[in-house]
Image (cartoon, rainbow, N blue to C red; front, side, top):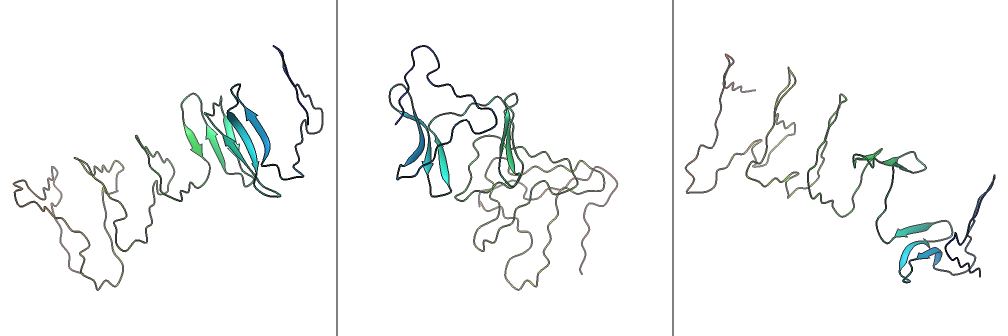
Length: 193
């Protein structure tokens, strides 16, 4: 056991040259490899022993960074920008119990690929559910594209149409579908395959 006390100066100062400055090895049944406490005895930081080759770090409070990255052995990293508050994930972001975003979500994708891909195998619930006064606003801002496209390429023998528009309130007095064409192109083309 090593006890170090300080009074106004650094209590413990370790300077290394070519090897590890501090090595902590648990050869017994200690629950923590490292345990740091505040001046009132509360736990602030600890590294627990999760097994012979693993350990978990616990921070009981905020993590403040002036910039840098959190990297894994596979190269995937989490980059933190302290000036803009931007968090960049250099790989896949997975959630096990669902993710909740309280605030705005903006996706800016500048390469030639899908900006957002959603794949759901649910047979009961919708893949995307939107609730709001203005549910969906889509703008096509590149020539030769389209604002929305709905396709289905399966031998469908069920009872659902490809697109279903329902204005369900019996007291509704508003238009269900409005189409406006300000140019010389066709308003509607219908084809039977």
